[in-house]
Length: 190
Length: 285
Image (cartoon, rainbow over all chains, first blue to last red; front, side):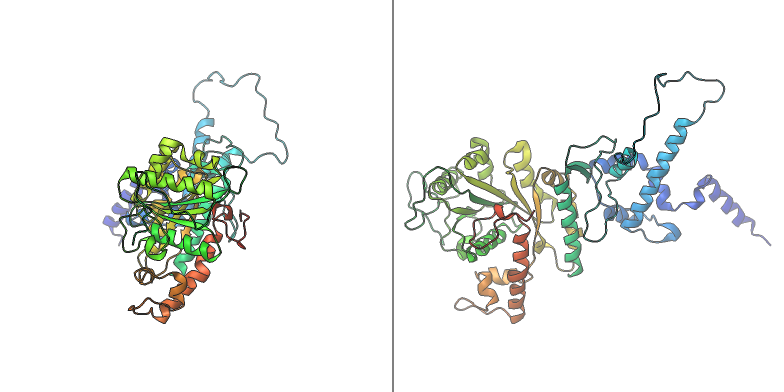
């Protein structure tokens, strides 16, 4: 005999979730909902992934399968959220208008940009890394690959990188990474 | 114990070295003025004391200026009998004392270590009035600012005041994170996260300040309360009437003094330090 109450409860929950939400963790949903606000905040004050993970865990947010969130898992989820948001925005921008053709806002002189081999890094990717203020993972002891453009994709001054929510000389960013690593080492031997 | 210079209308700066009469202004080697500052109770005197001991062990010719008249128990004058102090806490007398010291440093050519009282505005005031950095550099004296920070956000106040309007932030600025202030068993990284992620801190680093960790010594108070140098403490030397340090603590001091402190100085550009015969002079950057 099927329990009708349980089915009702399930239907209510599914209704609340909306289409496609079932495959995402609570962490993903929270970060996705708050993406704009968080991205703006991360640009001004970068709290660090440890702090974000602790705050989320204390708010009762769990990772996939109810696992406790770690700094690296939050960082991975955030990257996925940013990529999905960018994808959704791109899809929105290219969606064809329904019922009639609107006049083009693109200049009739526009031609596709020539793509050169071995050109500079794609700004979109670098900019999204800058927005996240995270760098490509680096092997132990090596310095991360810092973004050289700001979150809006504008290239920074020569020798500058985007780190901790602002532009700074590469040596400064490396110094900050170094002191973080040293503090982790100190904690290991405490 | 005071080492007061002779009283006069204009307080004198630190004492001249016996027989010392260096060259007058002209092409000459740059001398360093190590200025240790920060909020109260962050370990300024410990850091200043360490600089003096480390550099003197390696042959540095430096003068010790103790501007911290509030700290009697762990005053630099306890550890270094040649340290000089301003005659009083009066800001005007302090200013004249410091000006006299720099005047002498420019003429007699030595390096100096200045230990400031917690939050003391004397250097900032002098910097405002006289463009201190440029004034010293014209006399071939390079100011090196050691901003000592503990794990409290308020420890950044002094740094912020120095940075505001570019009042006093020399090209050679060190942000010294004192790991000795973290309670036993607590994560150093977590304890300092509020400070190291703060805008003031990040701005200072982005402007060229260099960050270094000052190593912890669990029995630091056992050494400083006895008024011992680190070399004395690791060798089990005590002053008359004192209990000796346990041999475990002696070993702790030995590790601190022989391993951790050389590594600490190794992380600082060598040309920001007082001249030490035999110490590498090239920056490790």
